[in-house]
Image 1 (tube, chains in turn red, yellow):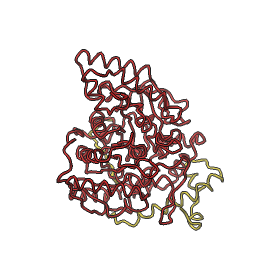
Image 2 (cartoon, helix red, strand yellow):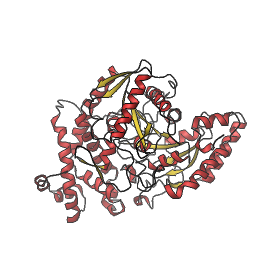
Image 3 (cartoon, one colour):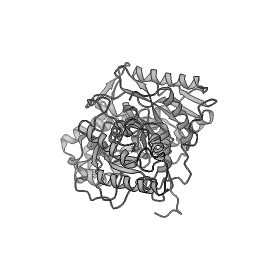
Image 4 (cartoon, chains in turn cyan, red):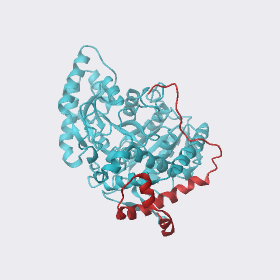
Length: 459
Length: 65
């Protein structure tokens, strides 16, 4: 067996089921990987090795007695430090929370994963309060001079090096899918309301989603099935069953895949455009029908994303941005102060404009099963890069560079999965995303799995 | 992101006072072009005919908190 820390979750689960690997051995291997890489990456706010090994021993004892909770039984998982774990301070990677009390109870998603047998190995860095795409505390495992993406950059870095089999992320404008794309991983943002946000610090209530980052599509699907479920404490929670893994292995023959004729194909790196086109051609060669489509209300999407996010974030931080603004990092402070000054009419116009966008996408998905597009416009940039200048001559700040293609799924609440699609000329990972209609996680995972099989990533 | 004319039109000091934000003159000067740029970006929202479209939120009065 290769290093157990680098096994896919499904592979590790199979090894444990066959009695060739224990949860303690797997957890120790992951902890050793973190120990070997943490000085270079700084993925973790806090590690919990003692609690993890205790949970792993318990998982092994349960398995020995015939009690197996499911595919996540005994599997190491990392938790983005935006998400509560009982007894630990949820720092949100911010000095604002320096004196914050420890959480009284686990967030709903953590409780569900523990019930499924997961072993929590620690809490990972986020861009401060999830308000950014760089995660400046953390480095990209593919090139430590570059950003891992964000805001779930710590979870991505840890999963990429085998520090855990799955990292929990949150996604308000792409914060699961962006670091997944930049670190060569799979990132699954489910349908709005699929996973409870109770116990998760909010960036923007009407855009926030919680989901998994993993090394394979099957892993992401299985994790989502464990994470999803109704929770009355989250007003957006959906009371519908989730079976994201139910269509895996069925291929794409006969499926209609939308290919955008606009929006996703301007101002992006040529290598990203080529990778997306290659993914399209691969799906066609596997029997999918490619249908060129126009993205509805494309001109409104980014404006709606920011016009919702800024005021909602400033409302969440209402007290602290007024009493302790100096404790925020400058980029986040600027966002929060600007959001506090925006007129209410802007916010309400955005909430209203969201409905025709949502209706447009619903109509779009009446003609196609899913939409294929690049996840982000660029691969990982060097740390502290403020903006990119495109061939068109347009200079674009880094936040929209990465958010522009992921935001449609947040504004509409539709599910989207980012899957690796090769590397650029510098050896940096490229991601493409499959977006589908509401509650179509099983379908988009099925499609993403085909791309994963056709374009395996280098280790 | 902003042009000078828009910057002059925005009274950041008044907005900050209304919002209860204590912003230094330097901070106001920093935020003015950013806010103007955002407002320029958000102007596209005024170009769509929303008719009687309500905001995309609501609540279930039966639900317990």
